[in-house]
Image (cartoon, rainbow, N blue to C red; front, top):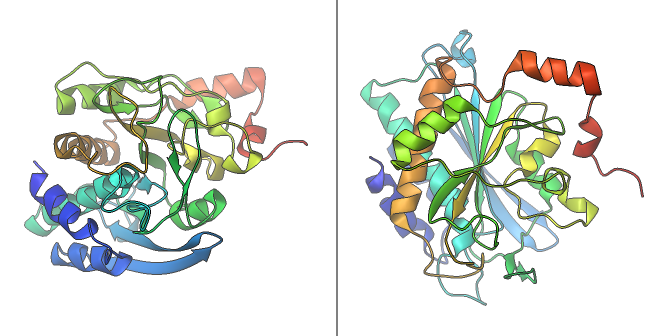
Length: 311
């Protein structure tokens, strides 16, 4: 269970004084040695990028061969001050991955080390801007998506879970979390059975799948409609990416306050923890390598979808 970590972090982040340094200090309490914060300024203001690495017992940092999992918390901001007072729905991605980091660090400190290395990245912005979006307003971001990818997507990541609040839509009406199909180099692949197994054991429910279109896996900067940023890391890596969407039955704006469901966040954290355990041990896979090779041999590369295309 990770309620302790979620509640402690929510209390810290639900403040106009929330910052990357506050989050880093919290993680150090749980044994983080490799954690750093960098403030990045964009056209909409500034935000604190937070990065923490948790070495595995057989991870590459220790000279081992276990695979490295990247866990990215996607959001515009955790607050929209002064327009809104308090923690906004959009902040759930940061809250989730930082709580997962705290739990993984505590496990490691107690002696339950995972096989593979874990790299966790997100950003903290308590006064991010908002922008119009149908059917409900979006949180905007102080920095562009390409900058997000630059600071959050690392070449060491062999696979990526990208966690994002995904409540402002009519296509996934479920109170909980959903996963997307695996996305790799422009291909929307079949859903991983091993990840479905983990969804079902951590949620106690049938797995819910977040629909993803080709539009959603192209870069934000092309101006085309995207459901949100849940799978945007795929535009910046060859690694397989699975989106973890925190969802609701009704449409909730990203800039809405009072919308964070602690029980759903905790369930999502447990899903991330279990994926981290199984991926490093080779029990869980994001995609079938032979099948992907067959697809590209037959139909060619779709890497052009990772770029801005032609105008």
